[in-house]
Length: 363
Image (cartoon, rainbow, N blue to C red; front, side, top):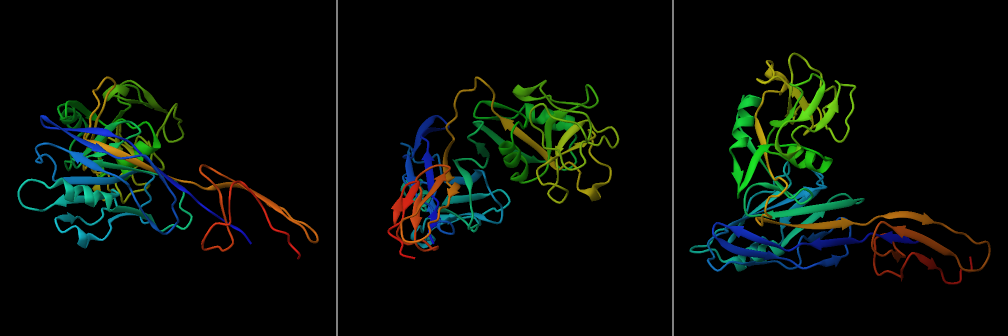
């Protein structure tokens, strides 16, 4: 019997990192690597920081920003004993984030941070791992999504009203980008902003103007309708309501990320401006989520993203033969090259390519 092995590919992007009044540069190279399920792979092959002052960065935050599977995906520092000046926070499984701190004396030795980033590895415990994973490396404790080139920040504030949260979001900024209550327009954004956020909170959706017509009322999407109707309504683009929402249980005109212990984590619930009266259901507003990013913003370079793509076999064509002869088998993959093996646990491939013709089979 022949077995097929998956490939994995890494794409790296180069960004300039701007901090304070000086420039620092983070760079990686474009690399393709094979990935075997249940093994480890580095999130970067090459990584560098250039900063004449050596004073701007002492901590780096590395997050699985898209494709993250909680309980199966993991980031870790390989061989931590070889990095004596680096401390590592325990992997934050809810956020999919690993934090590296330089702990030496004096100015930051970037060589230590660079070596540590090169030693950060990704692994999945899923033998059938698939899809893509995007990693963001940032200098601030803030989430970055390469898909939107936006930044997201959660602010805890127990019991805050939507109106107050909206006012606070409007006066926040991140390196010149004005903040606003988050507007969520894709599943990837919903997961990072909701499911991987450190807490539940208000976002920028409301049907206060017209009951049942839910719009984004903040940020660049201001005025965009994302839901029509109540529970059985529909979306003209994207919505991520919790089961049974929006239910207008009272005068509930504002969107809120569902608490982790209620329904689908990271999904949305409609609440009144003050939130739910019965906090036993976990709907009490715990804070709010601010998004930074609008059309026309100058590119920010406080982060760099890398991506791995895990190839999969998309189709196979079996074949048979009666009596002595050869058999040609075929397989296609989502990307990359198909490798053929004799043993199910790998070893050396016996053939490369979509079609494989056996040797003469006597039986």
